[in-house]
Length: 215
Image (cartoon, rainbow, N blue to C red; front, side):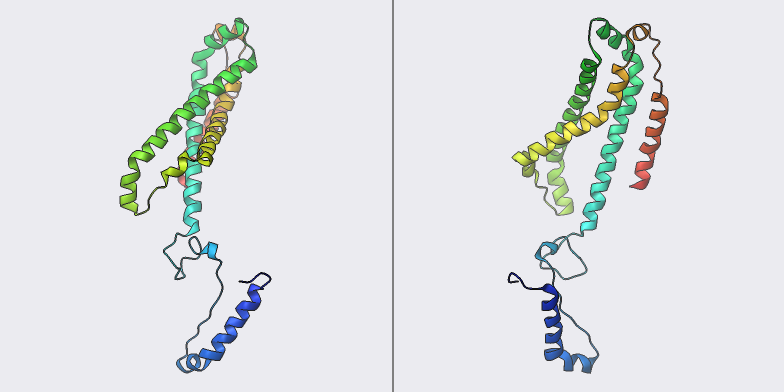
């Protein structure tokens, strides 16, 4: 449409055209018809009840799959937090020894967050490898090719690294706070208590089993 054209006004004229050129026939046979505007950007992911220019996908499916993907990531983060906090009791002496040697809480916090980010990075690489391995089979079953070349673009690499950093920090934040906050003497004597760690783990387990029901 030309700049400055009002879509509502143009659509009103379409109704007048229908009445002018088809009104008699429509009234005779008892049919109704109308023309309306559709943005070009809505053709592929718009209303699939319409006869679009080419087969499209309902955007609601993308929202559903996106939510399921986020829930799966949340379950993975919860698994890591539960395992890391449960393993904290076995790392008491390590933390106590490092603190006795002069390591500060910030250094220990950075160490444990780095471990989380390293595991996240390794799992991301394995996921990308799995994508490359299953993409031919997936494309043949679904009829939709996977654009894996987008992963190696500057934007794709940046998004992957940002994802690794975000998930690594989220997964390692609470365990790092627990481990780095242990007192050296109690840690070496293996007398450190997890404090609120137990109810946090129980809460996370509840969410972990709730997410599949929601999805």
